Amino acid sequence: MLNSEYTRRYSFDIDSYLIEKYSQMNMETRRSVCNLVLSELDDQLIKTAIDKLVAQHAIAKLSWIKPTKTKKK
Image (tube, rainbow, N blue to C red; front, side, top):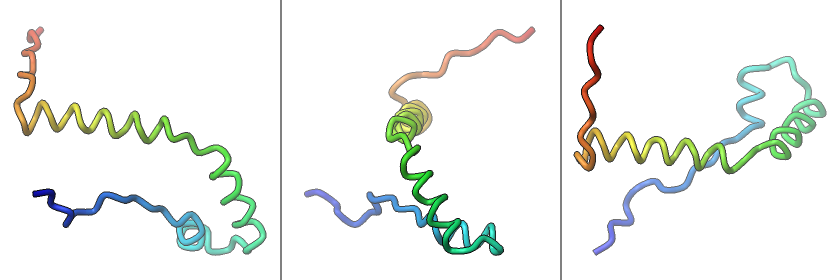
């Protein structure tokens, strides 16, 4: 049985972040920045981050691959 009781969707409110971190920024500027961020956002960066976390989890928690010991100098 599939457990559907976990968070599997990520959402980031750019506008809220800008309001919190740059409180003096007006709405027109926030809109411009939001549009710039959305136009520059690269899904591949997110996918790469996910792949790295999957690999780390597989090694650390699932023992899929034993970590190699490095030689001490």
